[in-house]
Amino acid sequence: MMKQNKMMVGLAAFGVTISAYTASVGAAEFDGADNATSEATVNVLPGTGIVDPPIVNPIDPELPEIPEVPTNPIEGPLRINYVSDLKFDNHMLTGREAKIFSKADTIGDTEIPAFINVADLRGTGEGWTLKVSQTGELVEGAELQFKPIYNGADEKITTAGGSLHGDGDEIDIAKADEEGGMGSNSILLGGTEGVALVIPSDAKAGDYKASLNWNIVADPSN
Image (cartoon, rainbow, N blue to C red):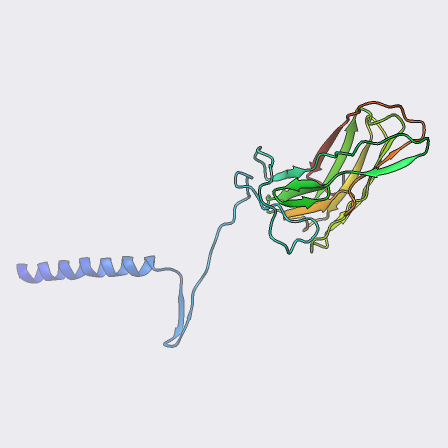
């Protein structure tokens, strides 16, 4: 009798073991000997920018990403990764109004017109607005003309642009509507020619410098 009880206890323990193992396999459903349904699950988390997003080529996004770019070192899920400094060649006064264009960036062995790269890693599809403002005056009476071009496939991204005339001016560069602008996107700031600087005929000679303040706002309505 004692031996029989031991066998029953052993079988019971074995049964519990089998039951627990079966439950841990998953939630697969079996509709017949030759039919089953299982699940695939994943948890996608918002990015922080700690891993640099790719810098997409602003002329042709199908080309390989741009290497060796000094990107923004500050983490954040909605971020400006890169933006060009606007550098212009020396200009000699002639008594006439003149339009000159910013020099291309040299990145590694590649020359690319002035551009900006933004990344939305929030994973919410809320959209954004990209703005630029000017601090200081770059030649009295001069005008910086932005004619941005976006060559990517995201139809929710549109460009705006306009002119900065002096200290305190602000314009919109681009906007991503709701469900747009996610991932990494690059925008040419003045097309393939670069950003234009219009210098008046009565400009004074001198070395000039102004700051351009770029801001990506987490709301496409702003």
